[in-house]
Image (cartoon, rainbow, N blue to C red; front, side, top):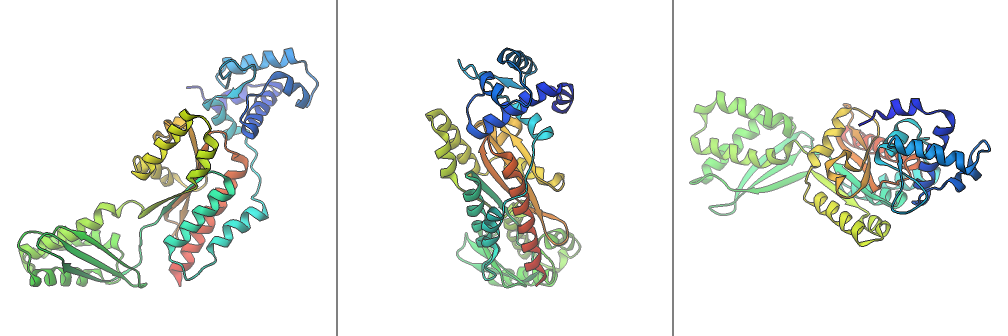
Length: 356
């Protein structure tokens, strides 16, 4: 694949302007841009024949292409990438857009999940795309852990956090567990847990089990491992993926083939397939990242683009992400700053709540 930035440097001013106007015209209308249209908008007066020659050069470089029998041109995926990296003009979010996003964060009584759900709905409404919000794990210090027997094959582990948040999960306990072994397991965990987050507890508990194996019997030991495994399964990923605005993409779709691709995309999202890959991008630093089409496996089938930004807690640790999915002809100049603004706002809100 060509290096987009290097190619951009090889273009003269006229070629660069033709390329930029083809991309901007396509992003605005979704239609191919023809040479006659460009003769009316170029900053210098040039003939349609000259523009056609420039467009042929750009096509040879792989930056634009001709869809079907159209005389106009549209940017290729590589062309879009080059435009986003080198020519995209980003404007600050409008006051109206900012107000719509900010208004979702006003309810102090809401839990974080409810607030993020509202953020996702507002973001999809403002951008006319589908929004993604990756909700963080609950990382408050643990106050109490309890095991509750439901039947011979099912037990409940209840986790109470210092901030009053309660979570519980059902799991299969080891064979032959008794009320006393369950109490022993809970006592063991509670002695370790106080003041620790779930991540810290999982890190410490296996060391302690190894060192204190003689102090807890085999059954209680197995109970701790079983109960801990329930949390560990989801421990390293986000607690919840919120997707809002699916109908926006379906309205954009139009033809049956595009609608089917969008359906596949959402099926993949709902199964969380490749979300690990999607999340990995948030580990690569601050700021908005843009994935176009097949640059991310999750979106390769749908021809969609993803604009995403991580958000951080008070310790500058990445705990989730906010993003917008849409057709590749997204209004990047408007959506990039909106996603960035939303991610920063969510990060500040979560940090403020943690510090209360």
